[in-house]
Structures are given as structure tokens and as C-alpha cells.
Length: 178
Ligand SMILES: CC(C)(COP(=O)(O)OP(=O)(O)OC[C@H]1O[C@@H](n2cnc3c(N)ncnc32)[C@H](O)[C@@H]1OP(=O)(O)O)[C@@H](O)C(=O)NCCC(=O)NCCS
Image (cartoon, rainbow, N blue to C red; front, side):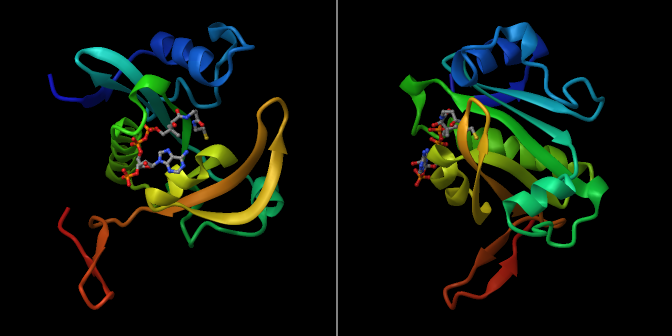
């Protein structure tokens, strides 16, 4: 069975948030803003039919105080209603490096794009900064602490309405097909 991502229920999401991200909190406490919003997507990554990773994407504008804390307005002109937040992104250690994280981000990105999203953002653990950078996110360079979770950085990625740009041999950007 090929690896895939598909929507999963909030109970599975909260269980894996607990196991992979916040083991000191029981699953029922791991309720994030927007979890139940109608346009929120909760995705699971599967390998051989086994759930091996999670991610959620919610429509949420970067809070002004977070933008300031993180080092300035990084929204690339995206209006608040077109800003989407990636949350609760994690894969089990034994499957890392096999593309599940990238597939989860891609699924979240496509969902946001389909609903008019122009910016995907997250507060990234510094240990995962390279992962997000690899997937086209940029950081603001200023690190701030999240209580209990250590240093984080605000990272953003533009969502192109007509598909992602790709680089030609000369290095200029052209728009890819949708
Ligand atoms: C960060 C995490 C989600 C990555 O998941 P993954 O399934 O290993 O991701 P992928 O295999 O799709 O990796 C995609 C690319 O990013 C790279 N990458 C993955 N984790 C990385 C990291 N921590 N630093 C730098 N690069 C990383 C991979 O090598 C791969 O690069 P490639 O395309 O050149 O091969 C996973 O390591 C994890 O769950 N970590 C613990 C929880 C966590 O920190 N979550 C993020 C909270 S903000």
C-alpha cells in the first residue's frame, strides 16, 4: 500500500498530538483554536495502512503581537482571511525522512489554496526549522520562547493562486501548472 495522506477524526489527531508533541498533556486537553471550524482540515499520513503522522490547517491570521514578537510584518500582503495556520505537525520517529511530513504540508497547502488561502504560516520549533525551510517556508529570524515547548520561530510560505513557481535553468521564476 503506497503512502498517502487523508482526512482523519479529531480524536486520532488529539491522541497523536499527545504522543508526539505534548506528552505532558492528556489528549482531551489538546484542543487548538479552530479545531472544530467547518473549513479546518485534519490530515493523517499513512504507511502500510498505519497512521504515522498528523497535521492540521486552520484559517487564522497571524496575530499582530505575534508578528511583532517574531520580528515584523511577514504576511506578504495576504489579507487576514487568506492566512492559514499549520498546526500539530508531527510524524513518528521510526518513519521520519520518508516524505510523510512533506506530504502532510502539501495536503494542507492545497486545502488552503482551494479556499482562497494566500499564506501558510506556523510557529516552528527550532529543531524543525530546517524541515520547513526545505518546504519553502521562510523565517523571520527572531526566536521566541513558547512555555513548556522551548524556542520557536514564526515561519511563512506564500501560496501562489495558480500553482507553485518553479525555477528555470536561468534561475528566474515561472508559474507552474495547477
Ligand atoms: C519535523 C517532522 C514533522 C518532519 O517529518 P518527516 O516525516 O521526517 O519529514 P519528511 O521526511 O517529509 O522531510 C521532508 C524534507 O525535510 C527534511 N527534514 C526533515 N526534518 C528535518 C529537520 N528537523 N531539519 C532539517 N531538515 C529536515 C528531510 O530530510 C526532507 O528533505 P529531502 O526532501 O531533501 O529529503 C518530524 O521530524 C517530527 O515530527 N518532529 C517532531 C515534532 C516536531 O518538531 N514537529 C514540528 C513542530 S513545529
